Length: 136
Image 1 (cartoon, helix red, strand yellow):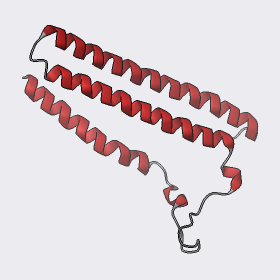
Image 2 (cartoon, rainbow, N blue to C red):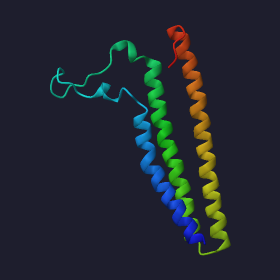
Image 3 (cartoon, rainbow, N blue to C red):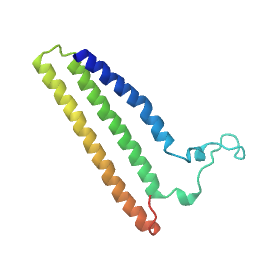
Image 4 (cartoon, rainbow, N blue to C red):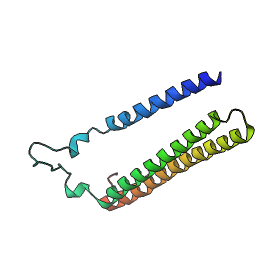
């Protein structure tokens, strides 16, 4: 029973890992904005004008990348905990250690998600005040 459950969980995680990035890219309708165009010289990118590269937007992008990497690290910690649990062979100490690893990874994911929400709210408010009411 456990092997069957593990196979289903592994299949679901693999599907999730493969599908989620494509869904994130599909949400950006203006993804070709940074692609080279025929009119821009060789090796030159069609970057947005200076009024769209505001400091708050740049800081938000940097924080999003950092939190994304931390989220990836938390997922890896959960996967390591799952691997420890699978290889514990029923030894109680190893299973207990693996459960703690998974628990800490999940707590880390929660903290990262909450920090993303807080940063998004704070920087959005700063951006709204600085631009006179438009959202980030």
